[in-house]
Image 1 (cartoon, rainbow, N blue to C red):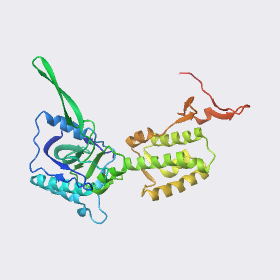
Image 2: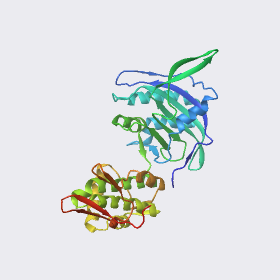
Image 3: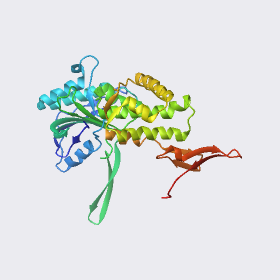
Length: 347
């Protein structure tokens, strides 16, 4: 079942703000003793800031190598869900745990907002949720105030509503480890501290995850490995990529053997793909079943990264969307390379 998240009716019930520095640089932290005060008109802006970046695609859950009860954030969140009067104390505990995890030299200090939401909807069930949001990118903005015969222009610093740095929302579900949606704009190495060191979460292995992972493996094989083992042209590579995406678009259920025959056809290529898949999955700790329901959202996301372009020097780009047999490659009598393209109608 596809993930379904809806914040249409969500309410901001409690919020508290702390400041967390980089422990490696000994920047310390500041813990608020009371909940933050919010003007009524500001709540809608806050909700937009916290929630607009949340996607209902890849979801996570809290984990631990021994016992999930030993996951510190999970335990603190569980306490808040069980007793909302512990909100302030446990929000402080969350800030302290984040500080202990902030040991990479590139991690920035910032404001940490802990939020208790009501009426969040996940998988069509209404529940409360806890948000943990860190704001790091403080930017200047201008204010222009009318004053009698002139305008006074000044500036202040704040956070862009469209650019939440990192955060997560934990939904109070019956699932083991809850369900967790994650926001993290940073793609650099230090960003892993948020999911791995601080939250200690793992991906929920549903159809979205499985579809996303397998298409990623197929893409890696075609673009990085196939030409090392077989004599394939760029149009051949594009054709394999197109067939991979088309298979997932045309089927509701994935079958590994059917995919391999439909896309690669040749037994030698199939064997090479199986070997690559086994090695890649082992190195990246990926465990996918031979059959699973296909996620349309994952297909759409991955399809955007499957390039169907053949680039020729700086002069031409050839987009291949369909029949591979309608394009031929050759060399003329002067040694110039060429492509011959067949078509019926010029659109």
